[in-house]
Length: 555
Image (cartoon, rainbow, N blue to C red; front, side, top):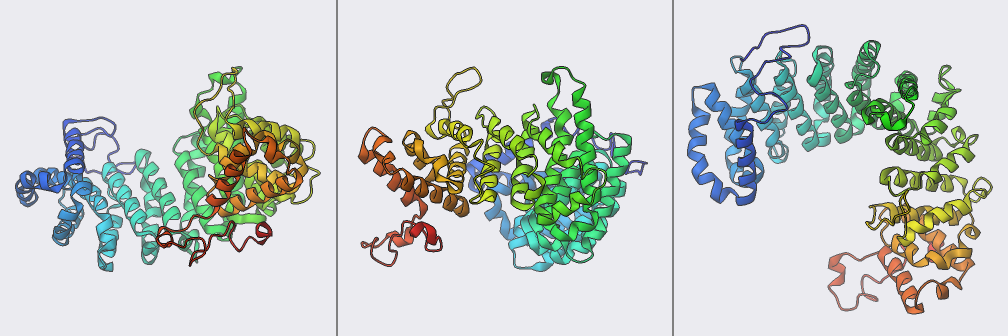
């Protein structure tokens, strides 16, 4: 069945092609096997037996032969790219013609769009801008195809091109967004999910250009209208998840240019959160709540975090300007950081940390409760929530500066929760040791501890000998230069406040000194080409324990 007719929902949305999207078939398994064989054995083994059949099939008058041959051509792209590249100047126009021809079967249009995506990297790197231009033109021309699976294939291929081309897409943004907005009115079901994904990819990979001039006004209002339309029928519709995710990316990239729609977006996100919380509150046992039930709330919280990151300090003004949700926002924040579902807390602590950085006035009144809940979530059995709570606590420490007052009541409790993470002797809820290190937790604990010590070294210094070795280990793993600076600054302040801790820290003084030196050396590892000479310490490189721009550490 190759039904190509129009319908109310944007095309034949059911059985418009033979294969079901989620089911494996002999054809799909064969293509996957060919992909694997090409990746494992390479072109020297694959192309000799394949090329004759491929050449014959691509020239065949029967569209089904061409479709199968294009599938094979796309399947070998990863394993045989170098060998296929010399033929792409001829193959690329062929694929475009199969995609755009009026008499092409829907299946042929689909597979041609997919194959174009598989070779998108060549199009972008071929030093011929016209290749990108004609590819985008062909794909955009098929975005409004009446066949659902062609819509999905074309939209997916466009997303692949955006990932490969990045800001090279800038000259084509207006016609692309015009077509996507038109598709927004046409698409349903899986097509609309793919469209939202592509809109998010454009924000993530193209960058600031999508927020310049009249462009946001072209696509943001239709997205919000679609949210309203879907939300009126079912506020928990799962198609709203990728919609909120793409808006989250857009808000970050657009920054202040998103301001005309910020209040509406904020209020719709808050309404979603409140609706989800109301539904979940009807469950007597939180363990009975399906994780998927909380997904809309999590996406809405992430969207609010995007608004915070995009608007920066102006987010506080946005909240104040919302008569409906402004007064309740601080209270809702306290509820979501204490939520029983870990996924909600993960996103909530991201919001808390960004508020500390960008709009701290919004957390001042509830800070004791927020700090207490963040410390309660320092639990490595929920790694992502634990990492985010550590990060949020560290950001609050940074915001406090030298004002130790807000942290004094909780500093001892925070320290006692950080020590097991640093020393690797954390236990689970049943009291059993957690033997497998959790990625990111050691370095995040080291950062938070350093930032706490920067506020007041006396919070950390008295017990420094208990965890000095673990802190050094965590310090050596930090990659972000600002976070590393803060952590080392707190470490140095703590050592100065309690130098005797070096003698009580480990089984031997030499091991302790070695751990400290290893942490310092890890700060700045010379590039390989600088290590070729004999006189590394005093030659062109000249080892420095800390980078020159961090004067406070050098002193």
